Length: 231
Image (tube, rainbow, N blue to C red):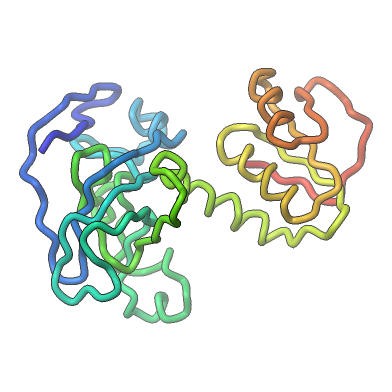
């Protein structure tokens, strides 16, 4: 299969790799779409230190199950799916407490290095544990479904602040996650959602997606807020 492989900082090549085979508890997914995360950009140029070549990045993806491994139930060939980027065992004490991010056996698809390394979805196919699959609803396209992972990040952030109806909120940063947070705050009942960013084009998009105000850091709105989020 063809993969987009990071072979050195800021250097990608299209390589031929053996098509993976799902093991027990895993499925093989034919990748339809894979997003480029901001962390992929920082990983590509080695500014974050979290992407050590050679590796296959990509952790915001969607596709179709092509093969189902042993001991997998509830999933079938042809199912349209997205998935979390965090692979966990589901059996250790951390997993049993819902702290899957602390699993001693965790891997992060296309993100982490050394013992946490696992190939990501910048490839024609990817193997994924059935534990982290999410079913794509009817009517939702693959491009939209590839937003599942970053959208989950934004929703988790909004759930943590427990916004109350009508509260005035400030979102510092209008990248992808910030734009998703803005929309989630509106859906959660926030009265005002004000965006802050250094990029005027991002602020214009924030307004288009529901922000009630938009400012650069050198502008003073004179407003006070109940909640401020930096993303």
